[in-house]
Image (cartoon, rainbow, N blue to C red):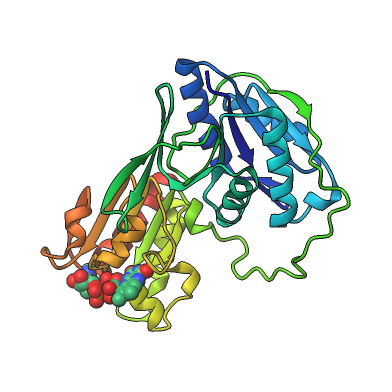
Length: 323
Ligand SMILES: Cc1cc2nc3c(=O)[nH]c(=O)nc-3n(C[C@H](O)[C@H](O)[C@H](O)COP(=O)(O)OP(=O)(O)OC[C@H]3O[C@@H](n4cnc5c(N)ncnc54)[C@H](O)[C@@H]3O)c2cc1C
């Protein structure tokens, strides 16, 4: 009967949705395999975390409070999560594959000298763990089983479906062992470039533009369609390299890896390096005037047409439906 711990990530007091996605999946596993689902929270507002975690199936939320958790520091957070695992003894610790989680997971695993499996998209328990992760730039999947008694597993945002269950989780605290730590590196200042925009790696819908948009002035078409859907706007490397949009928008092998429920590729040919970043999207729609464009091989729905006709019409229709 495995006990599953889920790290509840917060940034500036905002709890990350990936925690609830992992919690929902952990609950589904615990409902058949037995065991408990625990949240782990670092920060001052543990009761909000416990209320929310309970909704998604947590039995209990363990928390540690302290000024040192106000801003992410890998040494402090790593020490705290390792201390939690040593004292509570979960069988597995799930951490979202966010910017923070990708940094934190390996650190915790190294402290615990246990297996670390990153960027996972599937999880099974049948007497032991089987973790599914994409390899070769998303062309195939591998199922791996940790050999150590405990494992740290990084889970991609949107890999699991949210499912609400009843009631708040019970609260408990643990000794994080972080007081008095003088970290070797500290963040002095954060300059956030795109305030208010939906983060690509966490977006449920992404509308991306490629060289087919012809020029930087037309990225507005992509942004308008994205706005109408409450989506994030992405881009191929071709238009990032051309200086039409910022690198933070780039999807692909050398950009961001995304896994939204819906990915709309507009004027993107579907080069293997672009597919590497988005082929695990649950539903892919491609708009391209070339019927032989490789993007159609991975698309669930294809529109062979000029994007300058389709995108404004689509944006209008979605606007009408939404209003
Ligand atoms: C090491 C390496 C790493 C890379 N990393 C990445 C990465 O992270 N992300 C990435 O995206 N690329 C990456 N690339 C680049 C990649 O190989 C492609 O060059 C790039 O993805 C092409 O971008 P694109 O599809 O926008 O442009 P193109 O390949 O030029 O495709 C434009 C498409 O628009 C269509 N089109 C044109 N006009 C219209 C219209 N009016 N209406 C509808 N469709 C139209 C065309 O038919 C065409 O299919 C990498 C390359 C290398 C070598």
